[in-house]
Image (cartoon, rainbow, N blue to C red; front, top):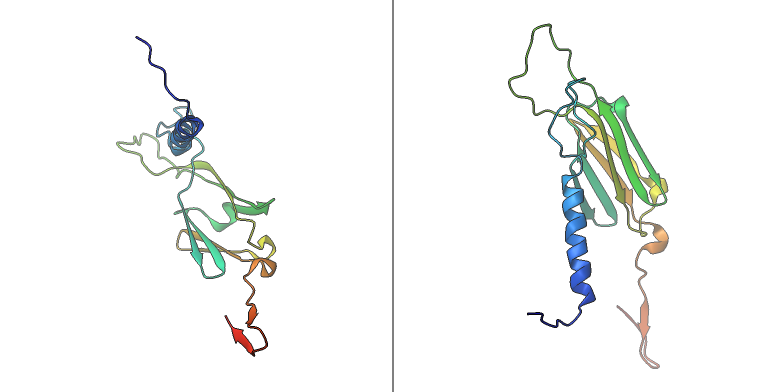
Length: 157
């Protein structure tokens, strides 16, 4: 028995978005180490993005990564964080019983809003946390306007 169903393009888009979300969530979360090198494949770093007044603040957890191994760039309003961490030297005969700390290359890209000024972005690395502060562009900040009422004096809004 076949039922007619009203086509809802948004339902199809929602299904597709859920599928893409699952793909991105799983990107970089492969926990199997490469048996030849003992290193993990490229992994995605966790980010927190907050709005603090007129600034967008991005925080990335990069414990154990040397500052000179971190590359931060902004091009066409896309913030890219790349780098690598090397595995510690393993002694002859040592065998991992459990290995959860990730090693190898990492990469993360994030589209920034059009309201930010990438020319004045400032990255800072402290205690394993990379903090990138991107201010709002002066031209995009809200302007205060004065409302005039008839022949009366101006009223500040």
